[in-house]
Image 1 (cartoon, one colour):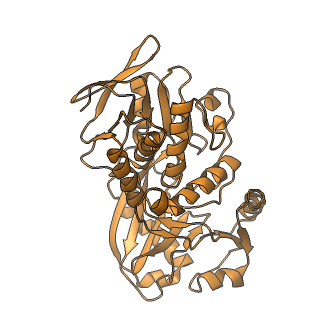
Image 2: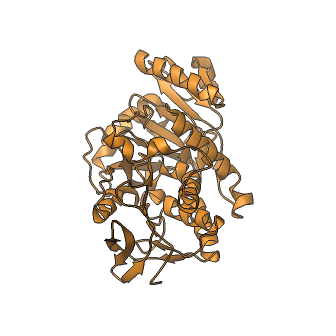
Image 3: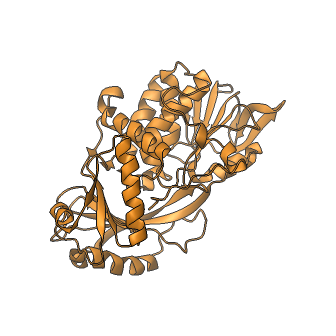
Length: 383
């Protein structure tokens, strides 16, 4: 492990690897990426469902998605690695009048920004998936540019190119202290030794709050468990990778192999770092799943896992330099949208570090300042 670096990145998920790669594209190669586990991508990135979408309720989240999806689509040409990439769409099913009206208003915003979102009635919904039950459904929103991609493929593509450009990626390198001198960052200390650096980037996902504590910076990120279940193949499994979301229940599913990948949030789940599977949750999910997609009654669960959402108070990411600690940058709080925003955020953070400002888009509204100045704008379309 190097003893000095221009930049130290804490966290070996999609965010850390994307930042490392994009720093090298800006000419910054004396970079060390620290991952506390034995492999990259074993945290939130490797446990997510792989979806990406443009259907958000705020302009900044929509713009982040637009650029990130463009980068995913161009990944084989720009990074030189093939990835899985399906644009079969997201379909949000709405059963409550208030939510339906809210989604209609959000669709107007999305269209103004160039997102081809559609409002669908029953016949159009069933053309997308004829096996759905539409009991109680008032309507749906659908965007054909949404889809499913390859979290670990993108992560390892960025990591491979970053290593080739000179980035040192260290496994089992847990950070135990962030050093400060004269009111700025001066380095980090790991269990294996110290690295002097004037820039430290907190890309620690669900652990971002703990890393912030080491720096004396409050980073309001709280981890919460989400379950994913994958079935064996069964008659009536989806013909494509359309992501269907029953918004009031948050039940979602999409094609995975010959079966489906499905999940649902749990409003009673406390904040914690627990990632073990609670199989009693499946008993609560199954009735919701079968009600909305009756052919699932024939399916059997093949495997399951649980991962962590890194929730911020307004379900928007926290991006930028901490105002009270120059040299300490934050890329965290993605609230379930980290994989899909990883490509563009790596680019944006690299611009901030290299140039002192972003040229891709204005992200000042996502700084840590907003929590102190009460400038929160809640993302409404969180699953």
